[in-house]
Every structure is written in C-alpha cells, then in structure tokens.
Picture 1 (cartoon, helix red, strand yellow):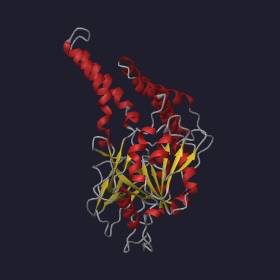
Picture 2 (cartoon, helix red, strand yellow):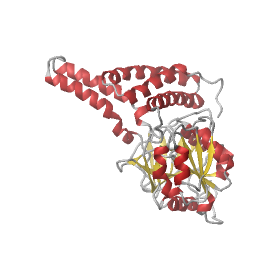
Picture 3 (cartoon, one colour):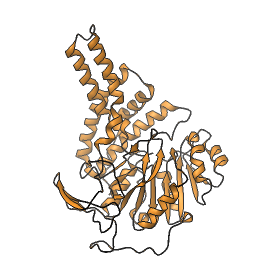
Picture 4 (cartoon, helix red, strand yellow):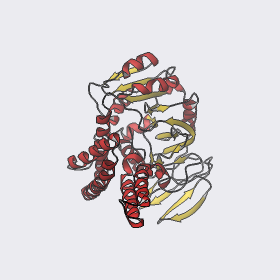
Length: 406
C-alpha cells in the first residue's frame, strides 16, 4: 500500500466543497423542490462530488526537466536540467535545504561516480507484500516467474493468495506472517534478509511487462549512487499516474509530468528499486506507519540526508491503483483503509511538523470528514461510506506520540 496522491482519500474536502457549491447553485436558480433546473443542479452536485477527484493529479506535479536555466518562483530558486543529465545541476534551495543531484564528473559539491561492474538480474531481489491479493497473482506472475530472487511476504491472508503463488510462482520464497504486520513492516522483514545489492519493492496490483526489469536495471547502472529509483506508473485507462513530487513539508510542486529522468522528493511506494547499501545507512520503513504514508516518510528521510531519489519516466509500469486487496470482507477492508489513512496522515504531520500542526490538521480533517458525510449518506455507496467511517474513527482514535523520531 502506499500514499501515492491517494485521490479517493485526500480529495474529500474538494468533494464536499463541490457538493455544497452545486446545491447552493440549485437553490439560487430555481426552487429546489419544484424546479427542473434546481433538480438538475442537485443531481450534478452529487455526480460532480464523486467525479471530482479524477482530475486532481494535475494539481500537484513536479517541475519539468527540459533545459538548463535558472528561475525564481515562490521564493525559491531552481535550475531546470537537460533530459540526458549532461553537466546538470538540479539544485534547489528553500529554507537552507539542498536537494541531491545526479552525479556528474564536472560538478562540484557532489562526488563523481565510476561504475565498477554492471548490475544484472541476479543482483535484484523482488519483494511483494500480499494481503488477500489472490486476484493479482496471475497477472503479476509472468514477469516474475523466471527471476532468481523473488520473495513473497504474506500478511496472514484469509483467501487463496498462497495457493496462487505456489501455482504461478514456484520460484518464489514465501515468508508467512502469522498476523497482518502492515505494509512497511512486512517489507522490512524481507529487506533485512536480502543478500543482493538491490531490492525491488513491488505492489501485487502492478503488472510489469517483459522489458520492465531490464529497463529499470539500466537506470540503476546509469546512476549507481542513487538511493531509490522509481518508474512512471500507468493507470488502468492508460493515463500517467503522476505519483511523484517534492516534499510537501517544504513546498508545493507544480508543472507538467516529467519528460526525462529527474531527482524528486517523493515517489509512490507501489514500485521502488532500493540500493541496499545506501538504504541500510538511511534505514528502511518506519514501522509505526501501519498503512499509508510509510513511503512518504521513507522518501522524506532519504531527502533530508541528501541522497538521490530518481524518477525514470522512460520506464513504465502498469498499476491498478488500490487494487491489491479484496478478500472475503470488502467493506471491512475499506473501513481499515480509511482508519489507517487518517492515522498515518496525522502521524506523519506530527513527526515532521510537531504536535501543534498535527492537532490543527486533526481538527480541520475532522470537520471536512463530517462535511463529506452528508453527500455520502444522500447517495450511499457502501465502499466509500465504509472508508469515510473508518477515517472518522481513525481521527477520533489518534493519540500523538510522546516525541517524534526523525
């Protein structure tokens, strides 16, 4: 699981705003009960409320790596960089924070690299965390069934996930947890045991093509000092999933999708290639995040230590966003998602913003959640209602830690 811009979760303030705005418009242009126009506006309000999140990816993007040149925007300076990274800087400054760059031979301040030996498929351990993910295994298996190092970490699934893994991926090593440890903790189990130089963390709802691993390894060979490399995710309809940006604790990212390899401050946890030598120094996932925001916390720590997070848009991966879990109790699963999304969001805010900011976020999110409850009740959709109920319960149950651990 991962944060990844989670529009269904994070855009509920926009949903509520759209809903009430359109009802007001209906009341303004006609008597609500008797006017066709008013009724149309009411129907449009409900439709727009549920459809509102679809375009939200365009609102938070990373700056394009098109050409070298300086610019000043929103009180910070940035350098745009060439797509081939020849003599590129990619240096951003904001509040005395310096963003890591891709290494180059003629650049001061960052050591140049020399590749002593190429990375091959035997140097990569593929790690997949499953939880009631039986429906994903058949599509995932063709790309992994012939790889030498595949580890499936199962979080106590109650469906036939393990039977599907045994059938479709007999090459895989299976680690069975007796309970659901959460996404980050389950990945840590396999990461601590990995003997390879790199580890690819892959969500079960990803569908790699035949060239995916080769292209990703080529990028790792090109940038051997990078802590983390991520592909461009492709949604079910074929659209790009812009699941990367700068840290939200510093500034808001804007602009079109990346056109070439670039350093970023966050990538989606659905697919991450770890350089294990670098990542062992930084540390793996913070296990206090049971579900959601564990990838954002990890990227934040990489960023704060001046290491490289590289987005490689030439490497594409099909991603069935939020499709990795089904199981026998779908509404309970949605409730759990909402609960842990709210909890993890507040934990992240507390960790990097302190108790005051997390308390403010909790109050604001609570008000917006209740504002969103009305449209969800008027036109009930069980999945969304269960998720929203879980979110509200998670907000009520949140208890700030005694102190943050950076």
